[in-house]
Length: 212
Figure 1 (cartoon, rainbow, N blue to C red):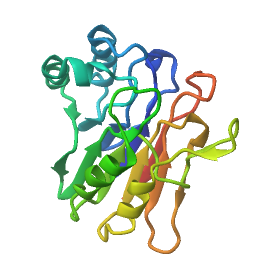
Figure 2: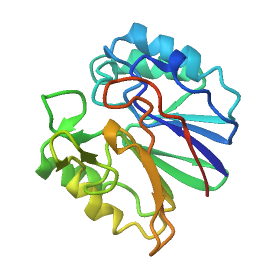
Figure 3: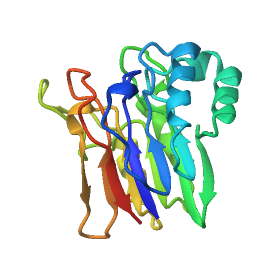
Figure 4: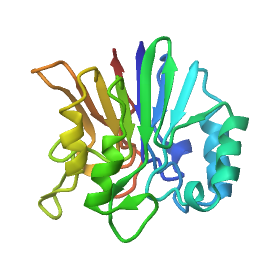
């Protein structure tokens, strides 16, 4: 199964590098810049138009409409053939995908939570998960911010990842400077930060394709 991974297009999807062919097209959040339903509709018209058999989306901290206007946002996803995952799973050709939008609290944006709550949220990720999609990265994996010299990933997520014995890939975005991918040698798990925009919000990073 070929996964085509993007994230953090911030309403600049039309100017992003083209999408290669694959089986599942994944967007790991921050598909909008303003978080409005209008910007979501524009993104979904583009995202849903691609020929990939399955299209998966999680919300990001900029995607306020999924918190404030959840029913309408979900309906738009359905209308455009996009599967939206908010602490939920979908099984595609026998592979278990689980998506979650939450990131550590920062400026009180969408889907932010304090660390004690985040431990509870991460504990709900099913043991059966094979492909995990979260908006933000795990702590110390593709999460480094050069400007501050800090690792901005989620510590509770890193603990949960170590417990998921069936995991094949973790796909995220959020930290634009962490763009890239790597396979963990100890168990062959793929880690992908698919942020399309760089640190200056320029949509220059190409999609990342992995096979599982």
